[in-house]
Length: 354
Image (tube, rainbow, N blue to C red; front, side, top):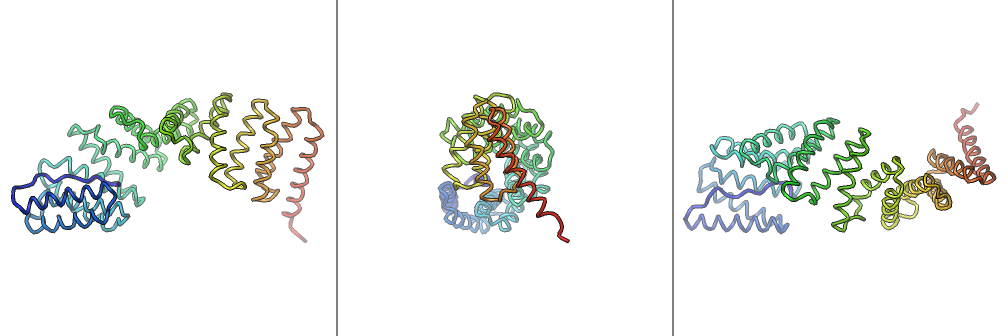
């Protein structure tokens, strides 16, 4: 669910109001069950009753407008959701004592703009909502923490990683305090913070965040989920660069095994993982394990992109260098002759014809 469904400010005692109360409860239940069309119908009916029985700027009208907008947003009907959020927000901003509702609606509208890749419009709304939550003592609310994480994503996408780092850390602190560090949103934020540190060459800090995320996935039985693959691979590359080979190896094996199950036998991503594991074995001096992997990776890339693919040549050059380290000079020369032939043919094809 994209947005926050809000509760009515208070129901009166009339029979019509009891019907309205039942409508909103049923609509909320339908939304929670994923019955968006049912929820949409019920919220529309509730709004019709309110428009007839209440003042146009009554807070309960704003609540139904917000909730109806959430359903449209969840169904990707952004152009229908936006004016409803704006109308609801306009009501709450003019009503004393409705700061919390206004902040929630601002966050919903900001989420909508973020979904539409309109981050220039989303950013000020998130910041305004966060100020209200701070002022009203709700900085640790789920909505506030979620807004912080999304604001971090916006800053990260704008290459403002110092600002992104700060709000990611705040969001993680909020999830930790709430006992929700194993939630998907918290795990995703750990990975994004790790990505920032990795890009800044802060490898120890990056590894720490990646490892926390990997541990959560393992605890939740999601270590083979496709979402975990890039993170495991990044963590393994850091460990390899730090000569922490015994820690890198199971990660690379897990990545490779998952890709072998989910990708075709000649997939380029599979070739990348095979080459990564071969390089690790090479670094460890496990040449017998590395040899067939180098050849398999080169074969897959060559089948897809031809023998002149730069990475095919790179793999073969690394492979021949390893063979020389093993003292297998004749085998190394064969590979070197092959790469030299490919380079010569490439130059001949690239040369202009007279």
